[in-house]
Image 1 (cartoon, rainbow, N blue to C red):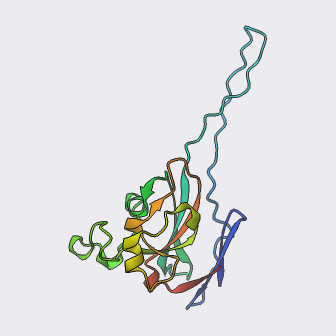
Image 2 (image 1 turned 90 degrees about the horizontal axis):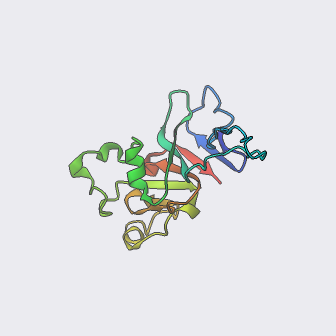
Image 3 (image 1 turned 180 degrees about the vertical axis):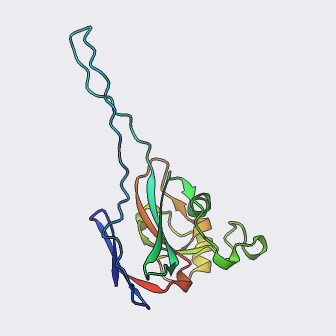
Length: 180
């Protein structure tokens, strides 16, 4: 058993079929480091100005958890960041995350049309940042858990959204279970 912790607000426990030889890192930190740059005070008028800090553009932090375990028994986690207002499929492909597994060949998936179901993912955390299921998803996933989504039909937030999303890729093949 291992624990993934993102800041202190999210703690996910997983169980593996094999015994890990090493434990997971204690914390995976998804927060960005902000660089503060200060401007020199203006002495001409006798009034000093405070440091000018440029506003960081809004973004959503993602933790993509692979369905397979690393040789030491820990899950393969990829941390990425992207702006909102995009489909989850596009974010994953732009970040070079393995979305389709063995269905990655052009003739084995629908290319984002929502008809094949090969871009199936499980949203472990951050469901509030995603669009509700549309009709295509409701039809394709009616016998699947509510946390499973089609990445090609799932919009992630708005352009001004901030937050964290944990996504399990290829949930049919995963070798560990999440405990909420």
